Image (cartoon, rainbow, N blue to C red):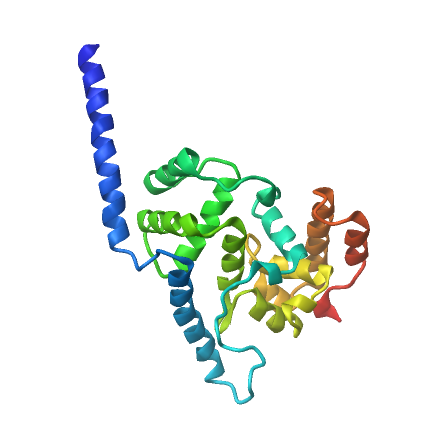
Length: 256
C-alpha cells in the first residue's frame, strides 16, 4: 500500500513537471499570441488575401471592401447573436461568468490530452477560441488547445463571438457574416430583418448550408427549417413570440 502511494505521488509530481514543460514547448512553436493585436494582424493578412483573390477576377468593383477591420461585437445584430449562441447549445452564454481558473485549466487539459470537453458555457468559449486558432492556420489538437488558451486569456466572451463570426469561410473571397449578408441578400448585415437573420443562421454552424441558401435549393424545406429556428428562439425567450410569428409568416428571401 505504501509503495502504491509513493508511485501515485511520483506520477503526480512527474505530471506537474511534464505538463507545464509540454505547454511551454508547444507555445514556443506558435505564432505570437500575446494580445488581440497579434490575432488581428495575422487574420488581416490571411483574410484580405482571400478577399483579394476574388476581386482580382472581377470586372466590376465589389461593394464590400477587402480590408479586415477589427471585429466589433456592438455592431452585430443582437438577433443574430441570439440565434448563434442558441445553436452552439449555449443559450445562456452571456448570463454566466467567463470560465477561468481551475475549471478552465481542467477543460484545457482534457481537450489537449483526450480531445473532450466538460459541459457548460466554458465549452462554447473553448470552441470559439479553437476556431480562431484554426483560422490562424494552427494545426494539431495540442497546438490548437494551447493557442485557444492563450487567446482566451485576453479575449472576453463578446470578443470571441465577434471574431468567430468575422472569420467563417463561406466560399472563395467570402469570409465573415458581413460578406455573407451581401452575397446572400445583397444588403448589409445591419439591414437584415429577423427572418433573414434566421436564414443566415442556416448558413452558419452547425447547419452550414450556405450554398443551399444561395441557390435557393428547395425553398419550402428551407422555410420550414428557418421557422423552426425562430420558434425555438421564442421558446428560449431570446426574442418575443410576436416578433417570431411575424417573421415566420414571411416568405424566404431567396424565393422572392
